[in-house]
Length: 313
Ligand code: UDP
Ligand code: MG
Image 1: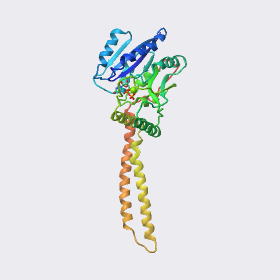
Image 2: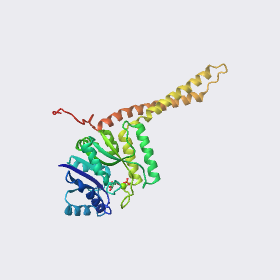
Image 3: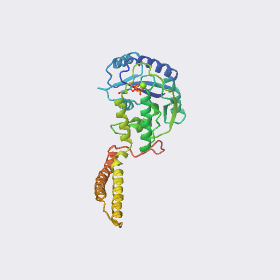
Image 4: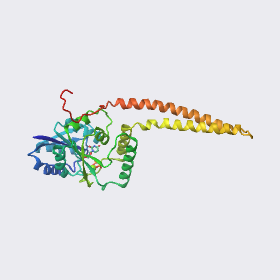
């Protein structure tokens, strides 16, 4: 019998956990002849009764595991811990607040188990139940990141997904500490089947993502997946140098004209611009080297094998 672990990151979700467990049990019960399900609750340093409720589940229900953090580390860390602790054939991630419909789980499992996909992931079809400002900011964020970074992130992709073991291993092989799952999920590749999914209102409680947390998430995403910002001084430096040459040329032409009046200001400006440009170029050059050190220091695996018929790796 194949095993499935569903990871549930929880941060102050006491109000919704019982309902969630009921829903998950309802959906997974009909599949229990084919799969052995484990619900792995990751308590991300909740300050309410979340942990007590999870412990009460452990006593009452079979197949419940939990990991509890010493403090709030964020959803990224919770998902990572879940993946490290799960040792099943299939690993899924689902939010605690029932915004991710558990009814998709059977179809997702079908896709990864029988249809040859490695990942079954939900993508939202709308952004209902989200503030206008949040959807505007987040769509701008994905536009920017997709333009300047090498990987393409589906901006409707959700963390709600079921993955084969090998995908989880690939994700775990990325040792970086500042993690941006949306980037990591698309960076590792594999065959993904997308499941359109309507955004639903939270069953209870309120969102745990403050604007500050979201801003940090966005910066982690951009800096983690592209080093283009390090190139800004280089480009600015080149522009300034070119400008200074144009100005110097202008001064020279004026000087050569019959009514020769040498525009001192042009020369002065040209000199200042040139020096500024030179300095920026130097900083940019250092940035280029730093970008390489930065990329290397992440120790990402250079490639990930999906399948092979060679035994000795
Ligand atoms: N979450 C977490 N740690 C955090 C913030 C959120 O584990 O620091 C969990 C939260 O309990 C929920 C999921 O991540 O299960 C999604 O969070 P939320 O619903 O608040 O985000 P939203 O749906 O508003 O984007
Ligand atoms: Mg939510």
